[in-house]
Length: 58
View (cartoon, rainbow, N blue to C red):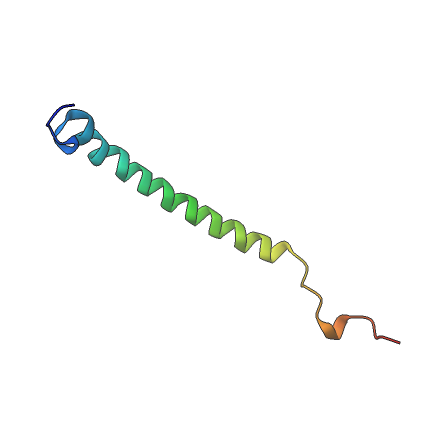
């Protein structure tokens, strides 16, 4: 095994300078899209029934 730390290798440099920021951007994008999906589903869903809406018990 090499004694060169990973961050000092060409692969390590690319990982920290390109791959990690790209992952962070895409993770943020997924979170934004998921939030939009939840909002859209909340608007499209009928309101949940409440106890008051339930049929009276006999």
